Amino acid sequence: MKFWKKLLIGVGGLFMAFLLMNFIVMPWYVRHDTLVKVPTVVGLSFEDAKLQLDEAGLEGLQGDIRYDPTKPIGTVLDQNPLADQTVKDGRRIYLVISGGEQLYDVPNLVGRTLREAKFMLDQRNLEVQEVEYRPSAQYPTGIVLSQIESAGSKVKKGTIIGVVVSTGMDAGNIKVPDLTGKNLEEVKKLLEVNKLTVGKINYQPSTNVPLNAVIDQYPKANTMAKENQKVDLFINRENKKKIIIEGEEDGLKEKEEKIEPQDNGEFKDDVKKDDKKKDDKKKDDKVKPTDKKDDVKPKSSDKDKKEEKKTTPQPKDKKEGDKKNDGGTKF
Image (cartoon, rainbow, N blue to C red):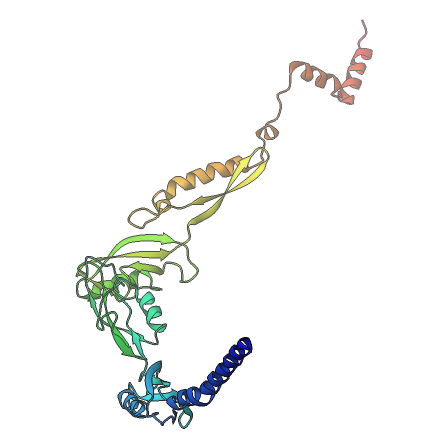
């Protein structure tokens, strides 16, 4: 009896615990998590939206930032869960905040060439503008010395970034003209007008400009220079002279002779013109296939002369006269 009594008491206790959890504890727990309706906070500032959610028993948190030039910075653009949904009390509501118009970081352009600076700004939807040229002992010509907007600052899309460009060491105040494609006489006159002088002349072949025209120059066009500064020139001219024919035992051979310009820009073949003419004449004499032996007649020997006399026919009249004289003489 005692065993069955204990078993009955144990089963009754479990049943009572089940009833207690199902009808008292669980309903109390569910009623503690009260369901609330999510208010609309889109269009409010982040601070105002958070305050309104707190009053509704919800927690507002900042989510993503979305750039929108039509909405002020900090304005709520979206929310999750959406407005008018029923959620438990204390639920977190994530808010998408406007970042306003998108801003771009200005890169550091100092020490870069203008081409590099333009490429870096293009990647950030920015533009470059050359605002000034200054001489510099640290940076060569064409390198950015400084920039108007400091590196790391935030600017809007399409902002023009001003830069100061180096013109090299103590460049002066004279702008170097563009000499490309002009002949030497034109170059001299143009440099004289700009108070500059012709420097070293270098000759090299080119198909981009006419003969005797300037291919390139240093200092470059549009850079700054001092008064009476020399401008080095690169002029288009052929480096090959006429073909010389040389006579050899096996036939003729062609040889190309290069002309080297002197330091003053004049060609050496102009100076030694007479000497080369003499050499060409000697070479032409070697080429002629004449043989002097054919023009000189061979000397005849004494033996040949005797044979010649024997073969020479005597006149008939003389022989007949001799016979008559011999026959008419009688002793």
